[in-house]
Length: 271
Ligand code: NAP
Image 1 (tube, rainbow, N blue to C red):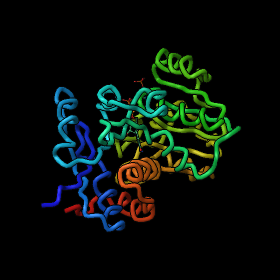
Image 2 (image 1 turned 180 degrees about the vertical axis):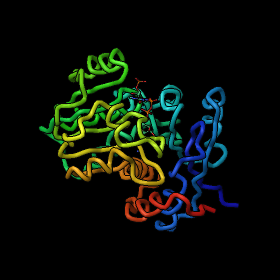
Image 3 (image 1 turned 90 degrees about the horizontal axis):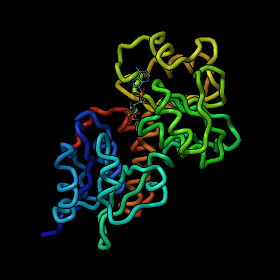
């Protein structure tokens, strides 16, 4: 019997993830008879379960909340990007052991579609996603500041990365990246989102990335679009980070259009 080629996403919870439908579409397009599965792993089982995956036929897995730090810790080798960010979202199982990478950072830059070099960028949020976004933009040559609801956490990140800390979010930078979880509630009003993030109604930036995504357009992206901003939504960032992981596992060029279409219609049957 042929050994199975399995991929997956490990998280807790993981039921909401669009990665399985997106990767299933990509594997179909590439005509690879591989499968990409959801792996709901509670934190206390994550390391042990992850180490057992290669023997079960897994080539690699994406890792999401709350396992990104643990994924970096358990790996035998890590890329400089994963080490610098302090978190991994991609594990690859090789003969040399478990390799950890972080495709969230290059995925964000890829989703922008153009270099942010020289642009003034403001990252809202200093959690895992904010950290990866601020590092990625700084590496790509942007002039980065971070703002966070809990200022100490934001100041710590700013000091660690050698970037600015913005006391207030308002001030019209060239690019705003929402890396907070504000907007995850699909029923939150535009006014509440802008208030929570300290943004001014009349000051949309030239470009805005909202890492939050859901069933419909977020209140933040709707506001930015109306104000004339160039908008990149969270699904586009998801597609780019997933594409980089898939390329790493398969060695094949990822079919971005098929992945984008599947991610946008998250309800597709993945069989
Ligand atoms: P996290 O580590 O838990 O950080 C959450 C962040 O949101 C913190 O900065 C927190 O500020 C802030 N926050 C939470 N509630 C807030 C509120 N009411 N007002 C203002 N700030 C608030 O989470 P994460 O892993 O960074 O993820 C953040 C978001 O990015 C999530 O929605 C996630 O789904 C999304 N994401 C998307 C992608 C993608 O590919 N599209 C990838 C990664 C993450 P405090 O420090 O003050 O608590």
